[in-house]
Image (tube, rainbow, N blue to C red):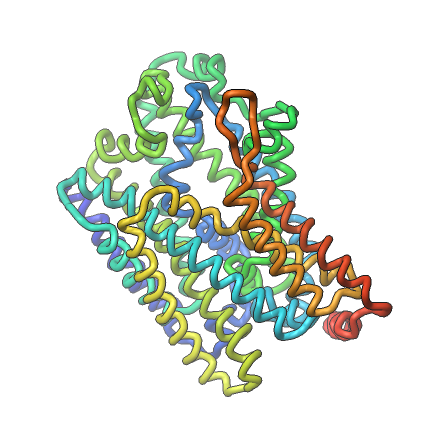
Length: 514
């Protein structure tokens, strides 16, 4: 490794924990630790949301989405998905976000506790914890894969578990001490690093491209943005179909950004409903621009690699294309910046998960089921203890996957398909069906998770004769889960003749807050 690259990486790894500790070292209360006393500026929260939903695999994989495994090109059609994200986040900002602020809640699941009862709050919190443990733990290991490949190229041979442990240890330093303020502001820095790295890579690429490459890209379909194939099988199985991406993407992001504490905690740290709305909708616009940037890098890589498809390139995965460019063709200093960017995306997502898990454990489980109201300083200590506990769990869990194969990784990364529909469905059940009780909601939640596990793992759609069966496109998972939850919960609610008393109490509290 060139000394300049190594110096950049070392400085980055040393600086992030120090900056995080300096920003958040003066924590005064548990509310400060978990939601920053609702005092964070919305642009910082907006960029933190984007950084939280961006992983190492996003940075590495998105440029490769230009290519399709079939030998053709997906082009820019992946951008249809974030178009749906903007719609979904706008709906969340007007439907769910005001209710969180009126109740002065610190977690998303406190609303379910007020609407149904503490048992439902506990069930949803446990589902969130399991979902985050699997999704973020496996994502932590998956993020170590390209890092190991890059380091191996430079002669630094490491094991996956070593990378996982080092990244977790460095991240927990500022997440433990600084709380949400440190996490948010370090996210802003890390977002700047990996977006800046992508822009520099694009500038370097621009100097290496042949004349007339944009015309060839247009003719080959590399710049194709919309997929208006409305055939039934394509709509069900392709995430690149227009309706699948936009409608499915909107429902998916309503769950991920309206019912998942990982993101809800971010906009609850804003100063007002209006600021939270700006942060949430702004994050949808920002993530669309981010995907567009990385896809443009992919289009330029296609031209740089001689206008060839994956088979002609002889690569095992489209993920290898950007990684190979970083290790082989970037000048000294730029390669180090890109590697630091990859580290940044992994550490940012992990820090966010640690703080959100700690918040949910203390607020949704400890306080609800011990029925204690300890002094604030004690809650702050509990928050820090649970941040450390979850860091150890993540390090162990991520390391265990060092001997696993890809199908297990893929199952872990798709775990949100099991629970997101049930989570969002529970919120909508509480809002739309006044007669639904806590028992109805819990039964509907459990049934939905069980059915979705069967759908994700066992349901195959028969394609054309002679072709292999295919699975349902992931954007439809959340919508299907929501429909199951509403159907089961709605049918069970028919047993009751009057609205749930909790509904009237919740509405009264919201009216008082207004």
